[in-house]
Length: 554
Ligand code: FAD
Ligand code: SIN
Image (cartoon, rainbow, N blue to C red; front, side, top):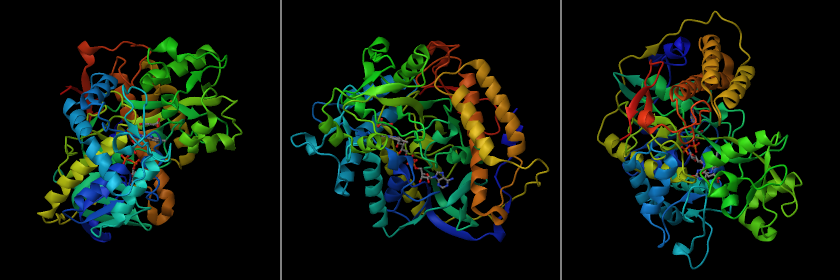
């Protein structure tokens, strides 16, 4: 079925001896929270190179709004945060991962303050920090910055720290095409640097390439989130886990002509309501936690309400909240609403759900090691087991900090005592394509539309099969192409991205079809119940398998 996708080990042909080569101790692919934190930890022991495909500011991290969840207040407890995480994770969390991230969380957040992070203050609270609540949390434990710009502050703090370390080099605007492997070990990466394909040999490689939001037509993620890391890890032979688990955020601004900007869940945490076109506040009809129910429940309730009212969207209502206080608490959202002449004291804010977070990913243990020797995976690209079948709000910046620290420290120490391995020869040949010319923009937008329609918030077996067949068909003529940067220049990048997107979409769709139950973020209209007897299982993928392997939860 997916022959075209499984055939190719590398996206482009190369002969190592003919390419420029670089060497580093630790290679970090990705400059978001997880990659930056990993590099800082690795730099204590070894030299480190960070690669990012756009500017260092273009990451999901930069756009994070609501905050970071951590147990910092005396009346809160690790046990409560663990319980909330497990409960939202719907039976698929790895208890060990949950415990370690939550218990190490406060230290990781407080060290950001020592590096200069300006988190919002409320004198009298623990550490004088302001806290908010988000969906699924039983306590107000989410710290934030500049109201709703937490990610920017976290990223900037880490970028400044990285820049202060001599042993870290950053190479932005560098597209990583594939991981290099030889003898079952990851040895670095093949990357496009300044228009030239380079080989980067590394003693340890840390994959921190973030999410996959761009696989869907409606998405909160920036353009960089095309799932490259998942596809390259899969091609290199690493095990992937729970690819059917994609999280949809309930509230993005729904205004024609505007990008689908996320409206933080903290708006509901601070008292915002969800109402339909008739003005009915519907969330109490769906869940006792109303607007603060776990986000899969809120996203599905919105879709149902949209259907029942025969409309295109629902609304956030903040008219009952004091406007000046609201504007001070959510400055970014207030500015956005101003741009569309939405008066927060009088008007409703039109919203719609969108693809937000990739829960599944590269299977990684408690120090981020993957099944492929020499390769670690951290942050959104990884599946550490923290989120299970659904992610608790504001747990992912925390995960990036915790696993970045762990993996980076381990990789740095291991690399410090070793010599770099460069195989005597490495090459990959691909026969030239005989098939049709390609309109990449058209394939990409068609893929994003079909994923949103058929592999989104609500799924059914027949639509999933149809989508698999379509992806297999498109793959036949997209996957045989060689996007040669020597000929195409930077235009090769969208070609590699669509090849990666097709691979990741195939895995998500097949896993979603295989899991014939509903659990957490995965909702099957034809199997609406959670089925613990048959499905308290992870689904694992390893190339060249075309169907996932079930594995019991730890
Ligand atoms: P990212 O921050 O996405 O970084 C990925 C990096 O990989 C980038 O530097 C990118 O250039 C690089 N990369 C990707 N592919 C390649 C390639 N082929 N070659 C080279 N480099 C590559 N989480 C919370 O906990 N709290 C929040 O309040 C919150 N709000 C959010 C709001 C929005 C709008 C979004 C989109 C997400 C939000 N999240 C939030 C989720 C959270 O931001 C992300 O899960 C997290 O930041 C991911 O961090 P990361 O380091 O794994 O990846
Ligand atoms: C938000 O601010 O609503 C996003 C939080 C998250 O995704 O964790």
